[in-house]
Structure formats: C-alpha cells, structure tokens
Image (cartoon, rainbow, N blue to C red; front, side):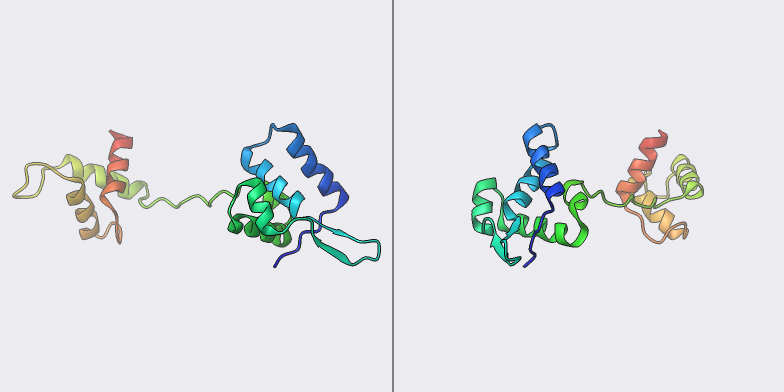
Length: 150
C-alpha cells in the first residue's frame, strides 16, 4: 500500500485547486482523493494512518477503489505534478514515408490488376507489401493517405 504524506504547501495547493473550481474535473477529483488520503502525523512523529480508508474515499468521491489506489501510487512514485497533469501518449511513428506515399499514389493512379475494375484499398495495401515498400500496412492506413492527398 502506498502512503500519502502531503507537505503543508502541497496541501494548500490541493485545497486551492478544489476551492477554485476552474481546473479540469479530473484534476479536481485527484486533488480531492489526495486530500482525503493524506496521513497526518501525531505529535510523537508516528503516522496516524490515513485520514479516510480507501472504501470511504471511493464512496465520497464516487470513483472505484482502483482509481484511489492508482492516484496514491502515482503520487508516491512520481509526485504531485504527475497526479494532477494528464499523461499524454507518445506520438506515433508514421507507417509510410514520403517515398512510399508517392509510390502508393502512383500505384492508385495506374491501371488496376487483371480481373479488377478498379483499385480497392486492400488491393493497394497488398501491392505495397508485395513490392516490399513496407512490411505490413492496413487498408485503413492506405485510405487515410489517399484521403489526405485526394
């Protein structure tokens, strides 16, 4: 279990986020979870335990137990900023480079193979793989590229 011990500055910042109400709902929700999960220390220096148990936090904030546990863990592992900020996925690499896209467009503009009236997206994807322009490509990727270039 991950124990949340907020500093005075962090506690004030989280209370400010909750009080203002102008932050994204997810940010306010995570701030409320951290405030309720904060462990205050007794005068003797011994932790007094969580202010609220996870089950009670779940009911109060209307989230699942997994969400409370995930917020606690992220705070302990990565800090306050990681809990409040949204983690964006890394950008995806393009499947086809400029030369492969040009080859795709040239193929789409050429005459279709024997037995077909026109090029289909799956035929074009298969032809790119056949000509070893790329290892694998889906018909949806072909559609997006052709739509982009018109």
